[in-house]
Length: 528
Image (cartoon, rainbow, N blue to C red):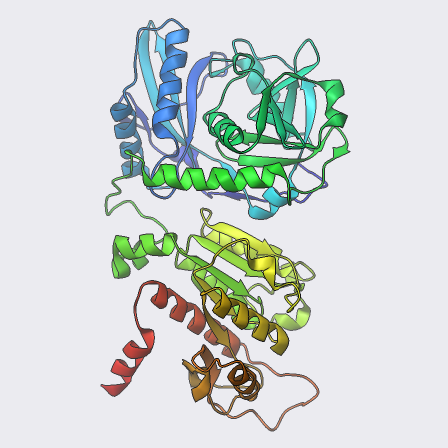
């Protein structure tokens, strides 16, 4: 798909066609889907701790089997056992699985397999996706059956310049998408088709319940001529959750900020997290099943890692210090991360900033960093603030009550405003002092602002914070004297210095979240 809108997706890079599959509980070399036959199926998204809405998906699978006239029930325990075997023989991947049920001479053939899946990045969710209408009517929409006609439609969609097809029936009514459900809204009222007219997805049912609790909902088949009168629309599905539609047949609805779609997306994510936490079907991942955080879990244990997954950190400023701090926080598995910066990647950033490459020159720093974070951890709940922080707009970060803030900005007024905000809202914060005109990365120390020395920026901050009564702010600063033999028209910087400071503040925050006193640990080590 080539779209004029910026669409980015997270894809688990793996050749799933070479993987083993599970057929009727046995490990097999593979399974080729027969394009000439119809089959019953469910697609289930694997999250970090459990398959999403697993019980609900198996219930719907069994409902379809019954509606097709077969005397067979797939138990949840059997389906989950097959999933466990799939993970054990292939490894664990954050992707979707497909459970296929075929009947050969009325005998069931149950296939469980990995499939390549893609999930929208935060930027794509904010920008929204383009869609367009096509004439297509699903036969027996209440049953999830993959037909040859649907396969041809999906093939056509793959080569089109839109993300999704919105289906029009013979009465020119919009009922659903080819792989999603559709909701329109006007004011505080949300419109969606009658349940018996669509393939009612699990996500659709969750979102419908959320709409009923927070907005007005009307079950109505939207006519094509009604589209221009709507304020907007969104689609829902296993991989996308709640996805804002940017454009439908040339009508531009803008991005999703301050829309019903944005609000419902947030509510849906909270519902998902609660569902996973209370799921009865959590993986029993054996040691031979690798995950991206294995080496960290070996050090801090599952309880420690779950604490990080449930924590939130905001990094303000994505320069040499901030980009390294964001990298470390993401690789530690922190569940919710906020990143704030207004700038673009400049060629002079390349010598010290992790996000600065020839390929990223001219791109927004928050866009580059968001891709990097989500490539590290696709399950991260990412909040993006594309703004220059000032004392006048400090409330822009108030949408999330962060557990910790990392201050990696240069502006004294902005640093003071951010620190005051954190103290006023009882949010922990660590501030990075100057890293320019230094050579020695091992000269950094973390201490209270009142104990700093040799750092020109720390001297200014120490005075101004003292006037505010703030003396115990933790900061990272260098005890190296500023280089004197240098070009004083610019602030010089070495490749190793700012990133070390960034990893230093990141390490401090992670240890604080784990209730480990890194300063005491450092003192114990240095005294031996």
